[in-house]
Length: 224
Image 1 (spheres, rainbow, N blue to C red):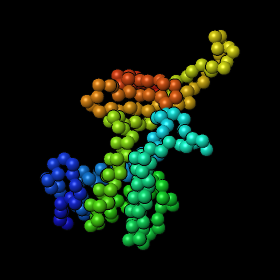
Image 2: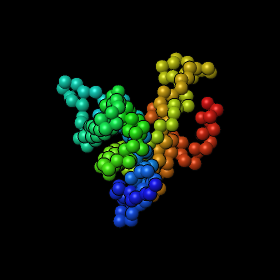
Image 3: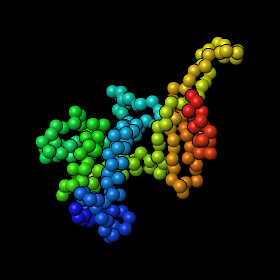
């Protein structure tokens, strides 16, 4: 089977043609980018709700009252709508063209895996340039809203730190109650040109581990 030229636009050297993968209308790089975008968009769509409601990362959700409405951040709210609508729209097209059922929900948690399942078929269609442009735009815009300073935030797992129970009358005595931190550890990855180092941070107790201590702390997590 002969191969053609990738139909998608490329940011780097946009005028240089890329050879499409065998049986597809896009190159290997674009195929991988679309797979990554569809894998990450559900979580990004969920994380955007914190920005949409104006709550800080790791903070408690903010609710509105009759006297004071929940703050609305146009760019973030609009992006969440676009992610949900566009993914659902492409799912409807796949279902109609392939005479199959649609996802059980219009949420990205259902539509993105559905599109991943049919990605090979999508990358063989003449409209792949429109599909690819929309999916990559949604991923790029969501990333810019979530990480405006170039930081990426990944949830690692539950915090392993213990702290003193503040209400205990025996706090200064041996054997006083202690509790495991209820927060979660996040890896903060900054751009390589940032003056600040990457680190692990807890969303609740403020515990931090610099990049230089990741290996040592990793052993502690394994033991725990």
